[in-house]
Length: 72
Image (cartoon, rainbow, N blue to C red; front, side):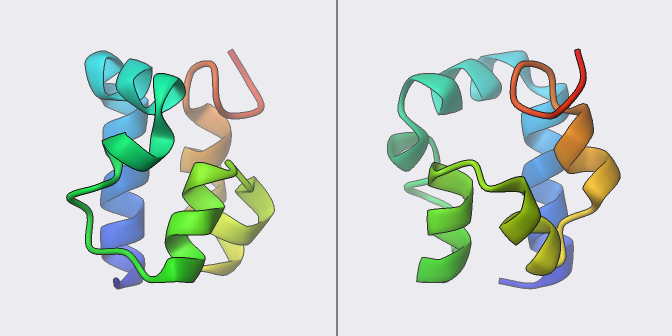
């Protein structure tokens, strides 16, 4: 997956409340169709903001996702 694709997924988590709720309930299932490396998938499933940022995710997006990021 590219940095762009990681950020598209982060943006979807930020803007799509239904997808975000699905992700909160079962991250692995919500990401099942996403083309992620094992490392990217683990960072999303464990919700590791630092690792997501290291993998190219925008820190602003990571921190601004309601109920997942660092801010409400």
